[in-house]
Image (tube, rainbow, N blue to C red):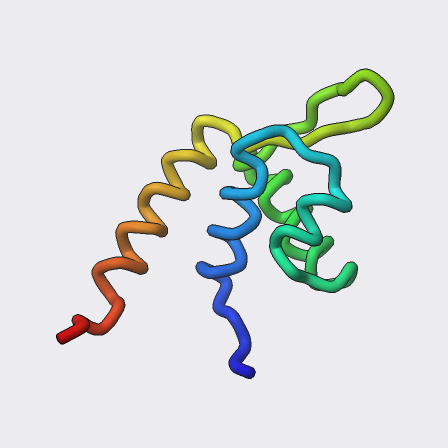
Length: 86
């Protein structure tokens, strides 16, 4: 099994947070262990790519407009760098 790149993991977290979710659900959707998840999650939060929201009984997180723009750029870059299929 190959290791996923920063780009792949970032895309998965930003896609997961297009709808507000709690940290545990984001971690499961991105298929990351706790330590790796926290590394990426707090980096995205600090850079303003995801934001904290207050749900009825817990904190939820969602992709910001800036995060959506980055997601679009990363998807396009991934698409362009993928090998052509015959």
